[in-house]
Image (cartoon, rainbow, N blue to C red):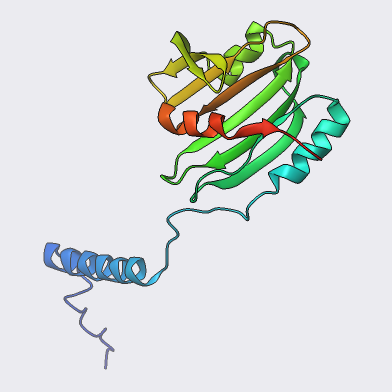
Length: 185
């Protein structure tokens, strides 16, 4: 007596209909996983103590640094640091998120170079001036990447160059500038 192999299942032979059924089963499992796995819309860290960082940087640098004081509700701090930047210039940076979720930061340095300004504005084009809080600011706009900047260039080399930059609208930047005050220990 010769042993015969059992007949092959018709499902193992493969067909277009079986391929579609398998694909539908996989898509259904992926849709279920997508539906049950939580996703985060944005990640934000804890608020930064800009004042403490500003006091520390002012002591180290000896500069009259600025910080935003008394901003309207909804503004949050995101970053603060005193670091070496373009052209080997030490730079004070303080970043904030606006109530609408955009970003604005102040950058300050002494004896700013054209290279430093170009790097901080992402090589944006100047296009006019505006007077805010007793200073004349040059407006910079970078079309192909949303970045607006306002630059205050001091009359003397002893003063600090101020740059307010980010993806916030110029109106939010004006509110921000109006709240900038010298750091008081």
